[in-house]
Length: 240
Length: 240
Image 1 (spheres, each protein chain N blue to C red):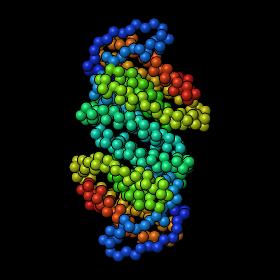
Image 2 (image 1 turned 120 degrees about the vertical axis):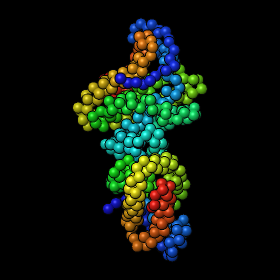
Image 3 (image 1 turned 45 degrees about the horizontal axis):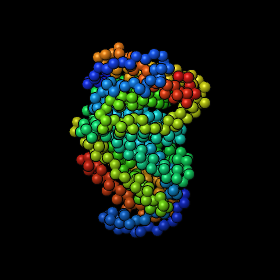
Image 4 (image 1 turned 180 degrees about the vertical axis):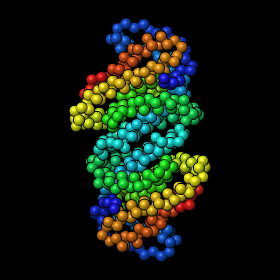
């Protein structure tokens, strides 16, 4: 379904066998995913286009913001996504790679994903970009260790730079206070979003040669990323 | 029509009597408009919201860009408008003024102006934001000298920071090469835009007490700003 065209240069790897969920969670940081990392240009092209799509979604949220204060706040978050995009594009330029050429293979899948997560109104759109961008930033940050050492640190810094999430949280909270039905709707929406987002990330992994083993290895990482997702939903007063 | 709410603290001033157009043009830099400058909070609120509107227009142009290369290029220009907005907002925060409160009085007029200059397709929208933002940035930069000295230099730097105009120029040129009718349409559109933009700027001035004298004084400045407009149109191969 989603052709994220990961890992053309993948090597086979052995899955560490993990026991309980708790163990898995604790072990997630130790799981070495570096052999699942796509080649540098694919990684940068994909993440750069993803951040550009996040920027576009946030820009739409700026244009349609319910108040001027929220408009101003979301514009800051949009600028942060654009800065991530530009940081990743800068790495492509350092490698003398045309950014458009590097991003092109990933546009269809990411555009489709963006449409899928757009939501029915301003609040769903905002939750959509918050939840999916958060999850995928985390996901790609886990793969950075497989990049060439000279760029890995800079890319990690770009992807994990702290954002102005509190603006999004307070905008969503204000909406839920004004409309008691919104909370239930957003809770459902958040669950669907995280399901779709995991599918996207997982489909990339499934494209590899040793699908079964990779699934077992990626599971504890997803468990860990879901912990971060739960904390995002908690901050909104929603059950993940 | 446009209530830009300029100059609540305006002082009367004498108009230098100017002769020919050529003289006027040469003299434009020497015309002192500082007594027409609105108070600091009005100036910052107005320009901050204007740059936010420019950012929104450019973001829409990013979302609807005809190619990935152009999308990437326009996103840089959108980021520059957002940086201007944020620079002006930073000055408001330094003064302990809530940016939303400062911008609020100007939203209706600027939103109406944005709709007026939106155009019928992607190319007209892009020319619209390029021409009007260029003119109004220049216009406000001329009023900076009337701001308190401590902030004037920083605001001037924000407003006159060089942008990535060449991206816009090459996108419009590519469109005109692909569609020979586009050039004639854009030339007409450019003329209408600069008329509307002058009206907006002028209506602000007309709100003052000594309208007649101010009109005479502002004329050489407009002549000068129209020179910059003509250079923008020239760069596109269009007659202003």
